[in-house]
Image 1 (cartoon, rainbow, N blue to C red):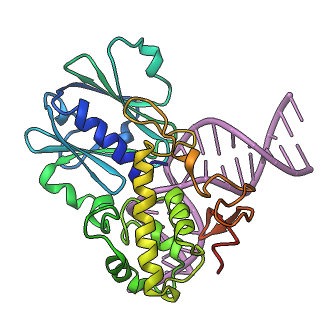
Image 2 (cartoon, rainbow, N blue to C red):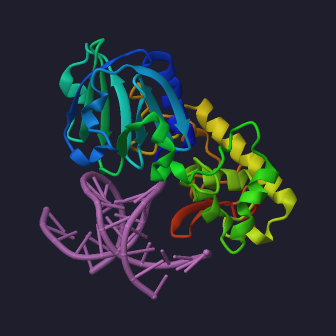
Length: 278
DNA sequence: CACTTGACCTGTCCGC
DNA sequence: TGCGGACAGGTCAAGT
C-alpha cells in the first residue's frame, strides 16, 4: 500500500538513476494496467525520461515531447528498474503487467498482483485533468503546510471522523492507512474524533505529526507489509520503527498500554487506548 | 449534497 | 484436507 513516503522513495531513486534513459519498447501483459488518454499507450516509445515528480501517491515521469507517464501503484503495484545482467526469470514473474525496455539495456517493470494499479500516458499539460490528480489536496510535507491549512481543509467536514478525513485525498494528499494511524498516535488523538470537535491546538499537533511520520517514513525507505518494493526491488524498513501500526498487543512506548486494533470507517485501525482517548 | 456501498482484483487466513 | 467467506486496501461510479 504505497503512500507518500513509498512513492517519494521511488521518485528520488528515479531522479538519481533513471532520468536520461529512453524507452525503446513497451510490452503490455495486462491491458488495463496501461492506458492512454487521447494517446496510444505506445506513444511513450522512443521518448526519453526528462524529469520525475510526485503528486500525493502518484509518480509522474515526464518524457520529452510533452508526454507524461503517471504511475499509481494502488495496493500491490511495484515499479522497479532491473539491470540487463539479471536473469529474466528473476524479475519477469506472473504478476508482471507491463515491461518497458530502456535503451541502456535495463528494464522498467511494473508488477501488480491485484491489478488495481494504473499507468496513464497523457500529455504533460493535461496531467491535472486526470481524476486521481485533479482533486488532490495539499502536500502535507510541503513548506506551507501547517495547522492553519489543515484546519481550513477540515472545515467542511465537521461530522467526519478525523481518520476518514486524513484518508480522503481531496483533504490532504498522500496519506494512507499506515501513516494515518501513526500520525494520530503521535498527536495523541483518537481516530474516531469528529473533525468539528478538534481544537485548533490539536489540529496544529496533527499537522506537525503528519509531517513528522511522513518524513520518518521517507528516511526509512517507506513501509513494506508484503508487496511494496522500491525502484531497486528493496523493502522499506519503516514498520520496524512504527509506533502503533502492525503492533497489536504490543506495549505503547509512551504509556505502556496494550495497542489494540479496531475498525474505524471500515478500516483496520491501530490505537493506544491509553494515549488516544476519545 | 453528503454519505454509503459496490466494483475492481487476488492471495491469505480463519473457522467449520 | 477442503471449502466458503472475510479481509486487505485506494479510488471511482453508482446508489441512498
